[in-house]
Length: 154
Image 1 (cartoon, one colour):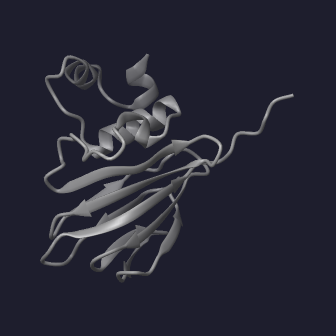
Image 2: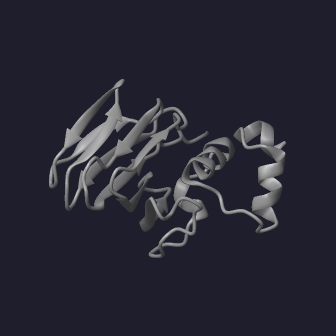
């Protein structure tokens, strides 16, 4: 069952399916992880996300998942003072972030670390992690999510 695979309740799945509720970023990640899909599989490339928490965290797909390359790229904008904690993604997933117009804080390896504009940070996303904008203006960053290549079968 979908609820068992994803950790999203049957009621919430029904509301999303009927168009009665928009998923949050966290819910969409649970769905992607549970079904072994990329995050961008649920979003239109080049369009801001219609997610329930889009006022605080706007996600735009720049490059949807490419199975030959094993990654996808997003532009993410966080509202001032917004913090997003993320559950672990499937094993082997790695994220790379590059703030474009301000400092971003990343929670990885059990601690918060500041990442100034123009610098990058790579971390294993198959464990709890997060992003925070401690500033007074929105901050946008590029997020490159790399998925492990599946070994070809004979």
